[in-house]
Image (cartoon, rainbow, N blue to C red; front, side, top):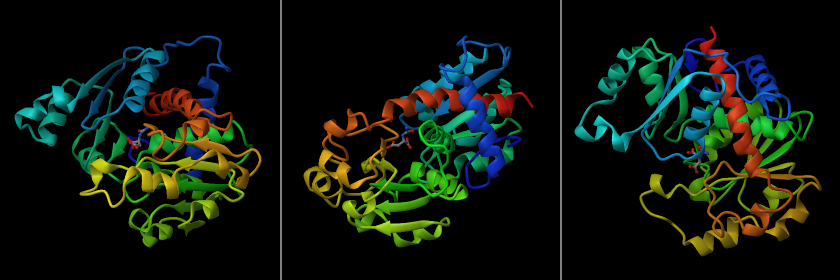
Length: 302
Ligand code: NCD
C-alpha cells in the first residue's frame, strides 16, 4: 500500500487483514484513550469534489485522533469553481506539502490519474462509480465484529449496483475472502457483466431470492445524480426492491442489515428495518473512524 490507497482490487488479502486487525485495536471498546500522537506533526488534506457527510468527517476525526492536522476543502468553496483544472488544484495543494491527500471525485479513475503525477500519497474516498476502498474495509470490520469469518457468508447487495463504488469495492474484498455475493436490483441497475468482476458473484432479480438465507443484507441508495432519468418512481422501487420487516424472516436468523448511507427511508429501506436490532448502520459509521485511523497510520508511518 506504499504511496496511498486507490482501491481494494489491487490489495493483497494479508494487507486487508492487517488493516482490519489494526482497526479493531482502535475501536473505542479496545483502547482506553481516544487520542494518540502516532501521527503528530503530519498534515492530511481532504479534498472533496462530491457531497459527503460520513466519509469526510470520519477521515478528519481519524486524523485528529492520531494527532495529525487535518483540513477539508470542498469543491464548491475552492478555486475549482473559478475554472482551475484538477491537476492545477492538486499541484497547488501538493506545494503546501501535505503528507497525504484524501480525495473524492465524480470521475472514475481521477485519484489514479493524480497518483501518477503527484509524489503525495493519495487515498481514494470514492471515485465515480469505480471504488470506495475505505467503505469496503469498514464494512468488513463491521461484519467481522459479529462473525468470525467472511468465508462462506452469503452477502446480498441490493439496489443500484451499476452506479455504486461501494458495491464494487465490497465485491472485490468479499470475493478475496470467499464470501458468496448475490447482486440484486432492477435489470437496468444490475448489468450482467458485474457478475464477472470477481469470483463467487451471482445475480438475482427478485429481492426474496437474494435475501433467502443471507447472512448480510447490504442495501444501496439509488444514485439519481448519476442517472439521466429515473426509470421508476420511488414507490414502485420500494415495492419491488425496498427492504421491509417481512423480508427479514427469509434471511438467516442472525442476519445483519447494512447501508453505507445516506439512507432514504421508504425508498430502499423501511424505517422499521433501519432502526431495528438487525441494523448495524451506525456501527458502520463508528467503524469508519477506526478503519480510517488504521489506513492513515499505515500510509503515513512509512
Ligand atoms: C456512498 C458514496 O458516496 O459512495 N456513501 C458513503 O460514502 N458512505 C454511497 C452513496 O452515496 O449512496
